[in-house]
Length: 222
Image (cartoon, rainbow, N blue to C red; front, side):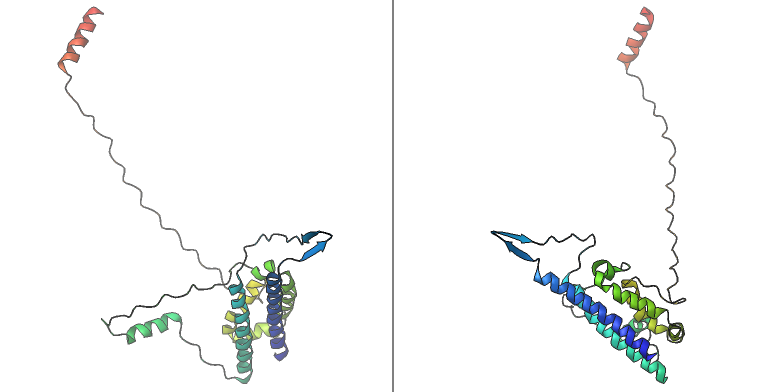
């Protein structure tokens, strides 16, 4: 299992290396060549995918570092039989904080938070923008085929939360039984039909005397 851990860490390092090369090319700019008395620049093919800002790439590199550390530590504790207990979910922690807060206690104004950086959620978003990360996806796919992985993931289900994001970003299939079940689709609420209004009742108005006299005179002449 240790060799599998080392290979998984190597996959993450290859992705970080691809990100570093991409950012270096972006900082260097296009190549400018002087031929005679004219300057020529290399043609950069436009990418069909949405560009990702540099802070998001830096966020990815930092998360890969934490992922390698957490995964290695998790495997070591699994091998030694010293896995920590599962922490309560967000709902339990939120309920505990609400109980500790006194009723009617004034809340202090919170400072404005900086914008939250989020990684893209589309499948294979790293491979689509970094072709050189294909080697990392191939190694990860080969690693997922090892017979030790299904046993490890079955005994340590919390490891799936660490593996799923990188597999999704590299468009790598998970081992059998490790994929999330499809979310149940909530049925749409049917809007109540609008009540049918009765047809408007005809309103009878008296005919003006001059119109009635003109109608009688026209009838006599006809």
